[in-house]
Amino acid sequence: MTKRSIIFYWLLLLIPTAVIGISAFYMLCHEQERINSMEISAAEDKANAIASSLVLTVENAQTGLSDSLHNIPEKQRIDILAEWERTDPLVRNVFVWHEETGLEYPVAGSITREEERFLKRFNALFTSRIPWQMPAMENPREYSEKTKDKTDILDYRKSISNLQNLTQRSSSQDNSDGNWQGDIITKSGWIPWFDENRLYMLGWVQKSPGSHVYGIELEIMTLLSRIISVFPPSDPDGIVYVLLDGNGKILHQAGKALIPAGREPEYLVSLAPALPHWQIGVYMLHGRAGQSGRGFIILSSLLLVIFLAAIILGGYLLTWHAQQNIKDASQKTSFVSSVSHELKTPLTSIRMYAELLKEKRVKDPDKKSHYLQVIVDESRRLTRLVNNVLDFSRLEQGRKKYHLEHLNLVAHIRGIMKDHLVRFKEAGMVYDDRMPDQDIYVEIDRDAIDQVVLNLADNAIKYASEGKEFTLDLKTSNSFCQLMVMDRGPGIPAEHWSKIFNKFHRVDDSLVSSKPGSGLGLSIAQRIMADLGGEIRYEPRDGGGSCFVVEIPLQA
Ligand code: ADP
Image 1 (cartoon, helix red, strand yellow):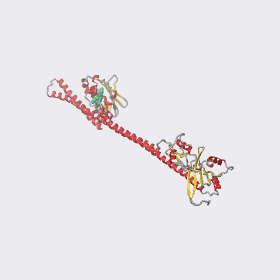
Image 2: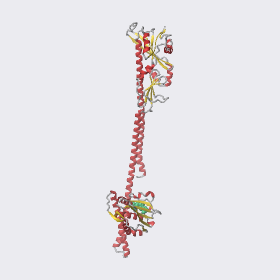
Image 3: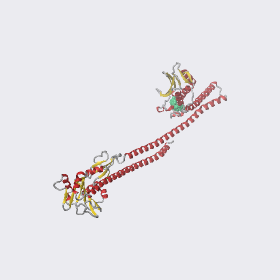
């Protein structure tokens, strides 16, 4: 796999992943906006519903009182009104007034301080400066739209000081005072009145033109306690509904959530004309998105991140695996060509010398015995190579069998080396035996230890002949004995110390590439030693060269 094809595959994976990621993220943001707007419109609907039921409550109270006013008999009017004032919590003040004679009740001289304030409040009406019946009021809907804007509210408040709600009723029933017959026109209405920025409400009735106007002033606090009961409990999503008076002061709030000082409501619904300037305010205290929306967005983003990470990780693993496979394949190819080369060289020598001997062209007995020795050596080398290859596949499949023997290790290794001394000599190397002259017995497989020692000796001849030295040393400890196989060759670069024991691994330099090799010898030696309960490792040798330490357990 070339670098370019890797980049190409990654682009193939990353571009669609990025497209999926970006579009999913865009859709999530869009979804969040949708959830937000749904939540806002749900809160607005709820505020409108609350406003409607508040207005209905006020109107019901006003209608009930208007009906009761209408049904008061004329002769007992003052007594009944005075009784209401005393007993009905909705009634704050009462009055009876006539256009010509002025105020009949409360009578000047015997009035309380509250009545005094009441008369002062509505002085403009009682002195006929303002008519009881105003021209038709503005369209309530228009008014409601206007109140959405705070500045409009203030402007409008100035112009509405005697806003009047008129009802004209047609009555065909006999009145209880008996003076009314047939169809009569009764005028009545509710006048919202602002005094010192507070809302007051005056309900009045005039049964016939030119007759007395009488009525009551509503106790706004009692009305407030009634409309509060219509308020919903607190909203778990952090949406708080409040009732605001004309000054923007919170008169009531659903729930106990703390509203930060100076914060404006997100949405306002006017309660005009029933309660002019009063409004329902909506605060969204947990940001624009509610808990449920946020939870959905967090979960979806998490899933998106996991999905994208899985794609990228999967792609990375596939690329890594493909690279590993390609590396393995190229190592196997080079292994096959190295093995063929290693087989070809000894076979050529064997055939050449065998043919010479067969044709009896060599007369010199020394030469004859030299040629025969070459044939023996080369066939041994072939055997070792074939053994290595066979052992490698057995070790890979875990099929290698060991026959442990009680062996004098020093004597055995000296025996092996004796058979191979001539090879060191031919390579121009001196064999230095530093092993102690004592018997050290181990439980070991004879062929296995031969294979390990000969692989190390072969490597020294192949890669370290220029150092002209090959040394064996042996030390014992309590449970192990250590065989040190040393040379004065070029040594192995630090970054290859652990890798040289991997199958097919060869140091990539000019010396190694000029020598035949399969990259199997050390890997086989390591597996054999692990199977026998020991180990093999590389250590750089003081003064230059390599030192392979073979640790063999004293007890099997
Ligand atoms: P091979 O010798 O067939 O290549 P080995 O597994 O025996 O395979 O050795 C692995 C590699 O370790 C060699 O290719 C060589 O690069 C390095 N090596 C092994 N022994 C020595 C040594 N004595 N001196 C220098 N390099 C060595």
